Length: 306
Picture 1 (tube, rainbow, N blue to C red):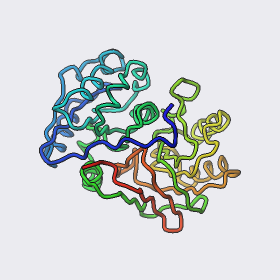
Picture 2 (tube, one colour):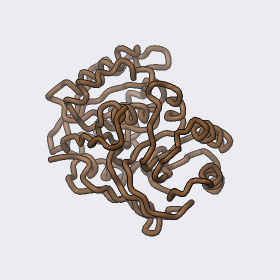
Picture 3 (cartoon, rainbow, N blue to C red):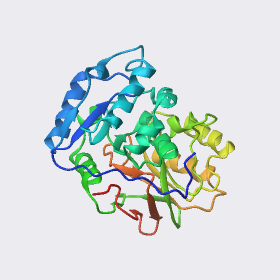
Picture 4 (cartoon, helix red, strand yellow):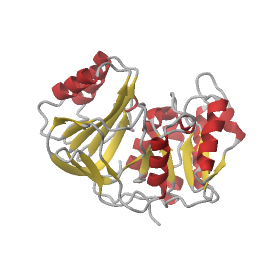
C-alpha cells in the first residue's frame, strides 16, 4: 500500500485545447446525457475523446471487467490524452481493480475525475500509485450540472494555485484544527472495499464521506462496520459532503456525532460535494488543513503542476 509519508504525485494541469478522454469503468449510461455532458466539457475549452466501446452493455455493467479496465489502462498510456473523466458511476468500479496496470498509471500521471462508485478508483489510484485524483462530476451529471459545479471543476483542473473550500452553512459536529492528506469519497463504495486487498487506509488522513439514497440506519450500519474494522483508527479529521435522500440533516449529524463521540478530531459537515445540488471538484491525495472555526478546508499546494 501507498504509505502516508510518500510524496503524492500531482498530475499536469489542463490547458485550453487539451484532450479529456472518457471511460466507462462502472455502469452503462444514458447516451443523451452523455452527449450533453461531453458538450459541457467542450464548451469550457477542452477537446474530448472516447472509444465507441464505452457504449457497450454487459448486464448491469458497461462491458466486461477486462474491457472496462482496458479503457482506463489505454487512456493513461495514450500521449494524446491529458486527462480522464468517467462517463458514469452506478456500480462496477471495484470489479476492475485487479486488472488495472498500476505501473503504467504511475509513470503516466494524469487528471482522473469522478465520484460515487468511482470512489473505488480514486482511493486505489492513490494507495497504489500515489496519484492525486479528483472527486468531482462524471460526464452524465455534467449534462444538468449547476454553473457553480462546472466552474469549480474547471478551476480545480486548470489552476496552479492551492484550492480553498468554505461550505456555505457548514455544520460543526466536533470543533478543532487538523492537517492531513484528503481521502475518501462515497461511503457505500468504500465500505465494500473493507476486507479486500484494496481496503482503504485512512490513518493520519482527513476523511471525506458522502452518499445518496441510504436510510439513516444503513448509514449507521456502514459506519459501525468500518469502525469495528479499524478503518477510522488514527484519522486526523472528517468532512461530510451531501447525504442526499438519506434522511434529515439532523439525523445524519447525530449518527456521525455518535459514531465518532470517542474520537478527538474535528468534524465539519455541509460541503457541496457528492450527490447534492452542487458537486464541487476536490483533489484527493493532497495535504490540506481543516479548521472548523473558520469553517474552511485549505490545501497546502496546488492539485496540479504546470
